[in-house]
Length: 58
Image 1 (cartoon, rainbow, N blue to C red):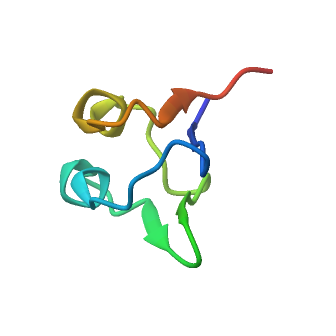
Image 2 (cartoon, helix red, strand yellow):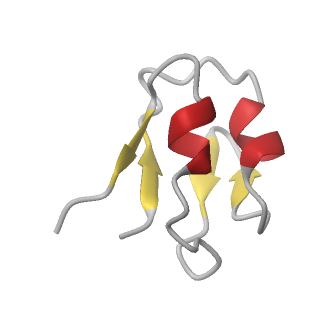
């Protein structure tokens, strides 16, 4: 499942943008994961210093 970014925890540092190899994260008002691009590699989760990115559950 694609990752999801919790806006209440995100500090808008941009680490996830740099970490994502397929550019699946975009900044709108907050950062969002474009599910159609996400390859579930988990890099954004590992690089998020705020712990704001989680694996999406069913």
